[in-house]
Length: 184
Image (cartoon, rainbow, N blue to C red; front, top):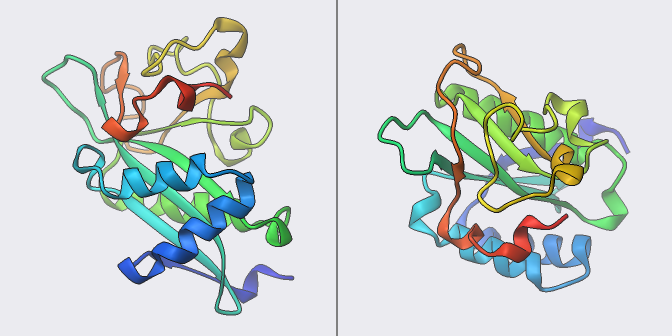
């Protein structure tokens, strides 16, 4: 399979079943599909970016970015959290996840986004520009992450200002404010 057969587009309401199915198959549980449904409906995470990858017209992957804020600060630069990213098992390890990340980052840059955060695999996300140990860089996660797992909480500066936008604890969408979502 080549990425030439992949189309990435913004999701629509009628994609909801396909999105749920992607997350269910990728994670083999109901937690992620429930999270996605809650995030798509959560006003505190908007404006959001939700992208669907299609392989020859068949839903293959999905990515979601929701707004993030500095907790308790009046100055709020444009920041997002990537959560979650899912690719159906039969399409994994073929570049679809990376293509979704890159497409999402491009759209976020067009929106004037400064920083993007992710809690994810320490060997995967750095391939797409994410820097481990976001807390050490001045951006603690919404929930405490022990220092020995700190490399899983990552940040990527994608705006012209880089890290020159201030520092502070990150506040996420209400639907993500559950401790179980902050354990890798």
